[in-house]
Image (tube, rainbow, N blue to C red; front, side, top):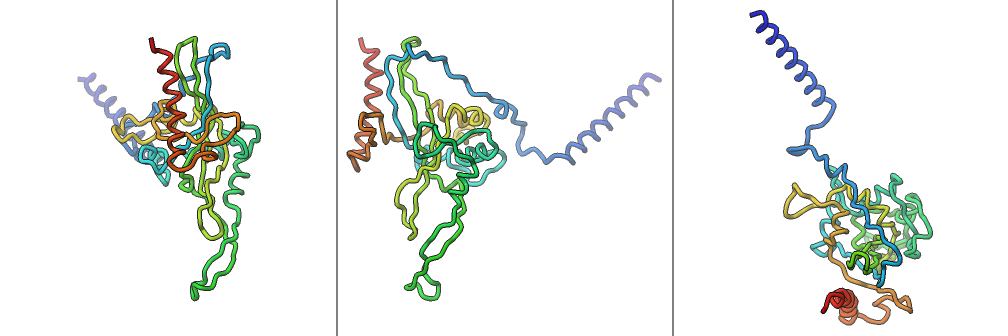
Length: 284
């Protein structure tokens, strides 16, 4: 009988301690927004590249692509417009990484990662006061010039340029591609509010970004319990793009010698050349 009383008292004390601990946790932290704690993504590390020797590369081609966020397949990289519950767009993730110093940015004047730029320099350029021409509210036919302060939003970026190398590794007998850099691009708008063309902002070195990309999720339309990381999207090529330049002796873009449908066909030709080269390697 005495033992039963002791067991009862011990169980009561443990129950009170658990209730007290649970109450303290509830008071010090917000409720969990989900049915389980996400621990795998936040601790994820990118799969390292396979070591590559110069002697093993028997063929190589460098190309530049454009990822247009207006294409449906690329929407997971553009949304959400406002970050929520640790889920954010690709541009917002990169800007946060630059702000915290986790990654570095390089000038858009060239794509060789030679001129570093700081987060403050990027923001001062993006949000610099701009002279515009406006119509008077009382008389729309009369216009006047004024200076307004610009505010930069991650949603202003509708495209990304991608610099990558395709190569054949004879040691492993595989055709492989490795992304070298990403460049966000926004519309260049003149004083009258008309779009003049694309404005590249800066370059980031992709291998340096992989650690950050691997720890952040991208929406999965098929299964929310198996969301992909940004590193998965790029490494597994889960995006739509078109080629706007291949390395050439003139260092010119496709748009410099082809326009309209001809430019699109030229882009497909470059992609087809890579496919044909790999196909012919295994033709008996």
